[in-house]
Length: 117
Image 1 (cartoon, rainbow, N blue to C red):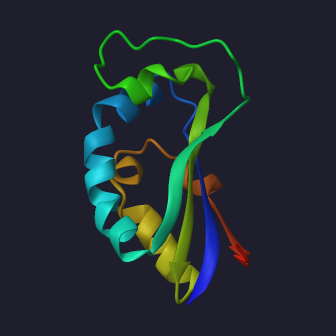
Image 2: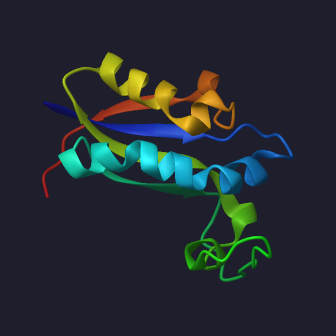
């Protein structure tokens, strides 16, 4: 197997943050088997910066949402272990965030990497 960084930038649409929050559980459930099998080594939000300013999400009881300035989220990143770049693309396109149009699929990058540690 090979390793890839899957960079999934958000669409710059005003409803993207709302779409992310409303569909987070579906996104996590969709990816849980990939994490369990090791196909995804890690995943999380990409940020525009590390800012100490935090924004509470009044619509969420999820503490993870409230630890992060939601306006700083600009996309998602996954470390994917797969046989081919095509498999990585297919995995990204099948994610609920992609299906809902939250990610800018025209700007997605699949970057081959070598994981040493």
